[in-house]
Image 1 (cartoon, rainbow, N blue to C red):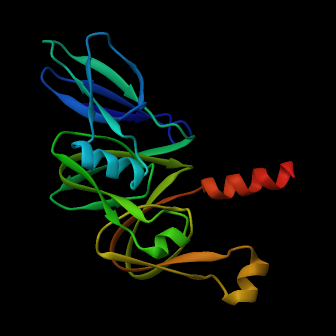
Image 2 (cartoon, rainbow, N blue to C red):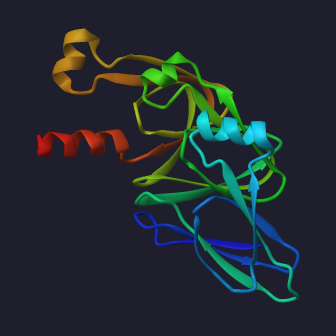
Length: 220
């Protein structure tokens, strides 16, 4: 399978070439275009209970689409996301990765999708009570509003709420005021994420919450 992410960072899309017998799994609605020979099958994401948890707790679609090549020739497929922004790829090797709701786009067979309790700190940060957990082996494609950057941390690191896209299990998250009560209110920063531990994190350069707040202030 050949995959190329084009039009980075603002209008990213995944251009995929499937060899005979290959398949890829994607969120419902992620397909932008495909060859007519591509076979598409819609399924519940891991069974009824798993699909319901993924939908209502993980912020993803109830259904997934399986795109497969059942011909003897190469076929092409283009996947994208609903927001304006970047798309990145990681490869899992029997190691979990946590994603914030809405980040997952597609994965290859062998990657398992589930949800896990994120904690009250995540809710205060505006990320929801549950996080999407991907495990197993395979390639994972995920997106975000704005550009995506990868950072390795070893110790503590502070991220503004709404900018954390994905992180490894060895990283803990705590929510705190950015600069005390008065300083946080006057600076406009409010709450921040204090990350601690060792591992990789992925950040987005823009925040949907920040955009909503900006637009709200203009229409009052």
